Amino acid sequence: MEEISWIIVAIISSLVSSLALLVCKTHLFPSHNKLPPGPFSIPIIGTLLWMLRSKGFSDLEPALRKLRAKYHSIVTIRIFSRPSIFIFSHSLAHQALIQDGAVFADRPPAPPLTIITSSNQHNISAASYGLTWRLLRRNLTAQVLHPSRVRSFSRARSWVLHILLRRLRDHQSSLRLKDHLHHAMFGLLVLMSFGDKLNEDQIEEVGRVQRSMLLGMQRFQILNLWPGITRFLLRRQWKEFHQLHHEQHRVFLPLIRARRDKVGKVEEEEQALSCYVDSLLEVELPDAEDGGNKRNLTDDEILSLSTEFLSAGTDTTTTALEWVMANLVKYPDVQEKLFREIESMVEGSEEVLEEELGKMKYLRAVSLEGLRRHPPAHFVLPHSVTEDTVLDGKFMIPKNAAVNFMVAEMGWDPQVWEDPMAFKPERFLEGGEFDLTGSKEIKMMPFGAGRRMCPGYALAMLHLEYFVANLVWNFKWEAAGEVDLTEKPEFTVVMKHPLEVKLSPRVKASSQ
Ligand code: HEM
Image (cartoon, rainbow, N blue to C red; front, side):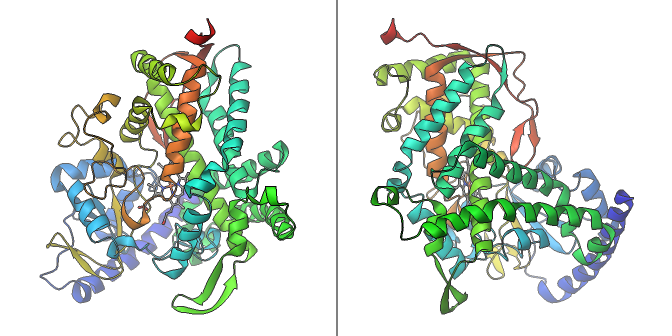
């Protein structure tokens, strides 16, 4: 029944899309301004075929990869009424995101589910390019991600690391690494969000609702199509979605209110460890995008920003960590080389300290190679332009188009990377420090680039390097079975067969 409803929705929306297409052709694009090329698509059947082939949008990438052979640097596909433009080429990405950054920094209108989860686009990733976005992003970068703020959480990181090491040591036989990494990353982000006074049970409960929502979102995508119709045809899914959203409120709101109640009452020593929610309580937004009276954020807005923080920072970093560790297990010579580097720089303690990471060039190279070869996100979040514009002097990019960038393809391009599918950290040891922001040139963009680039990239690199260094320093990692590097798209692109490992404690030269 659900499949049939789904197809009915698709047919209706495709009919509307063909109408919209006709209107667009005649009014929006005069003949001298051409959309980037793309496959001819018969309005109803073409859209349906795309949807079936791409399994409801969850696995669009292989289909796009095939189109690259024909269209090379940029392609337009039409799914429903909106043209979706995908950019493969490094230089076009640089032109769009860096040279023309302000124009390409908008987001397409948020789909219905995002409107609800983002509290009407009052979070950073969904906000239109404007004053609200700027204030929210500035708050995050200045109040939480500024190096001095990040440093203030080093004790929390060390605490989480020691729990992780203990959990790993307790395993006598093989273990599924991902579960342990996720537990550690999530705990860390929860402490940064709500303060370091939460107990294990509270962290578990926050984790449970976050996980249910994240896993549900893939199934709920269908509700974004014509909500007027799906509200009727897919009542059960809508109900399930609202229940999960309600559950988030039940768990998060008391935590937010507890921080609100603390304002003005905290001891001086605690004040230094203020968390993301504390900073959000201070934010003042204008009533309108162009100014006006100021107001504080509502509880619902703070909830949406804190859930964004948790989901943006947890699965991405966990996935990156798992991929790096999988490659270190698959290629023991790389693991050994990394261990030797750490050994030459630390003083034999159990923990590699954060301050020591900066000296470790091979560690950075291993992390960058992990992000190049297995970027957790194969696309960025959809962008749109603030006004109709022309890219590279010839491609019309209309305001109603969704624009995206083929992140993984850029990191695997043989024109830019020698032997791109091999895991070779050494490639990052040449040519000075690698610029992840792509400001001069984009060679890869695991965190995006330009104004919408991931604001958490430095924190993510710190988490990645700190945990990889300490895991390799404390254990020798071996595979329990085959290390299969097949990918699977979920919220991030994860290992289809999660890494199973056997660990043995390292005998360090200094302790012999
Ligand atoms: C390995 C870890 C991570 C990866 C690979 C990653 C990747 C990305 C990517 C590809 C984007 C989209 C950029 C675009 O739309 O052009 C993004 C956006 C974002 N990321 Fe991350 N991210 C990571 C970790 C984090 C962390 C730790 C945080 C929070 C502290 C974070 C917060 C955000 C936010 C708020 C946005 C939206 C930015 C905006 O729209 O202005 N991310 N990230």
